[in-house]
Length: 60
Image (cartoon, rainbow, N blue to C red; front, side, top):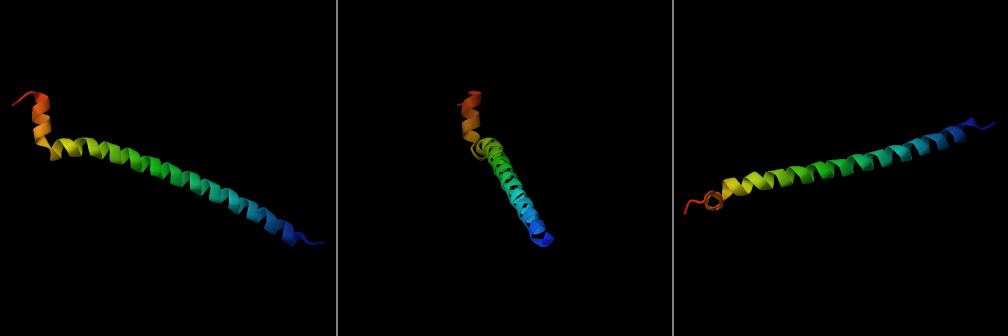
């Protein structure tokens, strides 16, 4: 008659599942950050280097 250890085992399994979910969320956040950096890199070059934009337009 020891119901306590069985409950503890179930709780440990649930905690492991939660940790796995947290890892997945972290991966998603990293992907979002990478996408934001790519989007920022595009306009930042245009705004930081107006000469390149002028050359693209054809003005010399």
